[in-house]
Amino acid sequence: MENTMKSSLNPLLGALLTVALIMLGGCTEEARNKISRTTDNFLGEDLRVSYIDGGQIVKTWTVKDGKITSGKDDSGNATGYYYFWSVETGYVQAPIERTIIEEILPAR
Image (cartoon, rainbow, N blue to C red; front, side):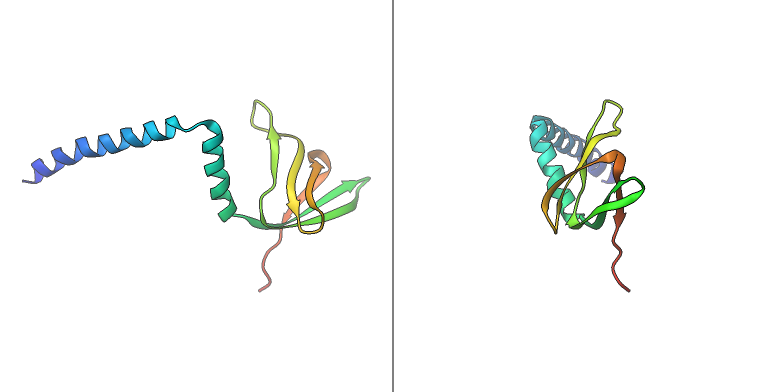
């Protein structure tokens, strides 16, 4: 009886996996990105972003329960600007070369 049950589960598991892959493959890249961004929204962090010029902090922003994104080159390295939504000013673009990002830890 155990062998019969195992042999009936294998085709079922294979069929479910095939259907899941077809559904995911049928999504456009934009749809997959939207799903990913939605998931990221649940995993946001509190961050402090500082712009530095001449060794001094010129401007600081706070990101509450959010994410900071950037463009990527062919190697996957961040290039150009960080993009984020700050509490103080709304949408911000800050050059990567002059930006520091710190996590704001909750008070204990």
